[in-house]
Figure 1: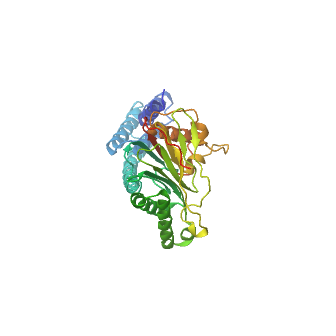
Figure 2: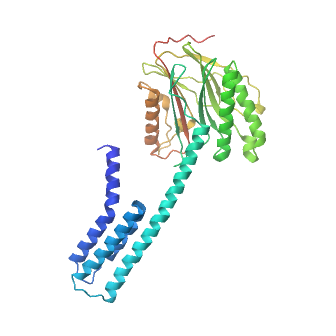
Figure 3: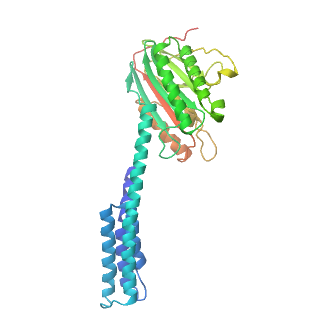
Length: 370
């Protein structure tokens, strides 16, 4: 039985629990002496129904429990003694409280749904999902937040077609919360503008550096002084089977070849993250690599490469993907997300942004320039 079927059976069992409690209460009352009471069964049924059912369902459950509680006493004769009255009133009061609880839970669900809608809208505004095909390349992205019910944090990606080729960025802003989200918006906004206007990838990186420097002067406290963003920029020229990369302190991209080979593309010379230009001057230099038809370029944040299992072992994407092929970039990212969840036991501690680009087959790779 697959996981989805197991989930459906569990949901059915939980929703059937109020009815099972009422049936169990009847059996308990019938099979035990009169001094034993089944009232705990009848009071539990509407309380459990409250967060599971609608208001009407909760009221019906409470009404059925009340009628059944009264009816089971009739087998001993129609006597409205103190015990019978107390038990029936107890079920009635609890049924009323269950209806109130149902309304409170529903209002909370509505507020949570509203918060989710706001978060989703913010994610679409800050991290819009790119088209599946841009400039002849297949594109797929995934954002996995470590915090439950969170949709966006400090990780980022963007894809921009330009006169100079399809340009990409993946990055990770230092820090958390709205300050990190604001920095993400600054980086992506600057990237989209620079990708259209700048002739070289090095110039695009320079524009991002200056944009973050301006943002740093506006941010207060520690984030304003120490804020930085690791990032990797890539350029896929139109008609050329190559990729140019500028890496600013970010995990190196992976090139997944059609035969299953995995080739990391590390920077030949380490460079500081964006936003740390005041600490030194290292001119950016784009590095080139062949990008043959059918190959996939994977950009990711350290939420992937630093995901740990319970023994503290990191997830190594290069080793895990070696010898494997995927029908599409989306299938690759879905596999990575599923494997990281299994690797961490569902307890990831950092956000994860993934961006995969596949070059169509039939395009030959041009050798890297000297």
